[in-house]
Image (cartoon, rainbow, N blue to C red):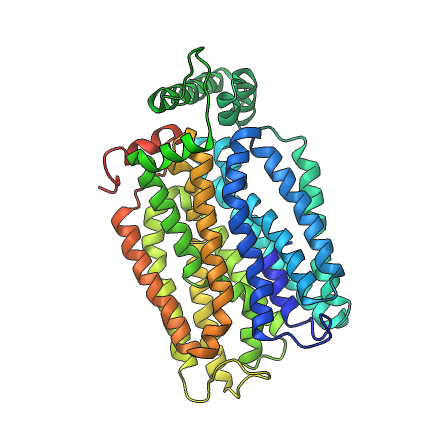
Length: 463
């Protein structure tokens, strides 16, 4: 069950169930953004732990936090307790959003890495669709006092299922090699490549490449001690990430993409879509929000089919302009006569204006799903193995930092500037992001993880 889908319906369903009063715009902003804030805290911390204890244990810990956070939310009686539950879920999301794409990228064969990582985004968007459907059902038929509680509490079920399944999943071969467990790494690679003679040669080649990268990174970083064993620390990893030019470039690109993914305003729609559609006069806003989630899901499938054919860089350069057009059209729609900022019961709108705004939101969401919704999560392929966890963790923290800013400021911006200027601002961010992508983001499709960092050895690798 996806958290962004659940909270959108929850915010318009709580009524006076928390603290015996209606939620204010500030209450909604804090409830929403607290998750992003604690995700921001969890991401860099989990990146350090992922190098120490492995990728899989971090995912299992995240599942445990998901379950406890969902239960706290379901049982909350005040805004403060609700914020506590949202914060626990934020810790889980921060850890999972960093380590899951990393886990998948390190397990996947080179030719299918983009598809496999996009499958994770596809699962997330499918969860959003399910969450919006559940949100609509409980909002309409579950009752004011119980419907939203079941809605947030049921989010514990997928986490429990994933936790159970993870116990039969392997650790990633790249972490196993780094932990001096090459025999186990070979077995994992063989599981993904197959056991016929041709694939056995591929297994040997992949393992040799990983071992070579680990050895070269350790030697170049001066990590070997007198007895020949590799030692590592947070400070050493940080120095490698910041001072080595190729790692610094990788961090710049990854953080740029992750920040852009959020500052373009997409999650303002996911968090507050029901609130926006209530403003636009739709009689069942939670059901109308399903159009956003469904579009996101359908076009993530399109991305799944295209990402390893068109390439990461090109798919962003093609899709981001349509995001800007969709946001600009939304701004124009909100600027039409009779449209005002969010009010308690929404402004009086013509049906044509409401549909025009909805159509432009759909264009924006579709374009986002094809490119920006997926590509930033391929961040781990930019980093060398010795800084991969830390670099990915910091990039993910950038994502959640920007997410926190958007979640906290969207409703106040709508109140202060109006919807027209708010969506215009997001459109400007899209234009600036497109320029940055064109300038510094290289194409990485079809290149092994061990070779991608070479693109950034002597420049940005774009040309």
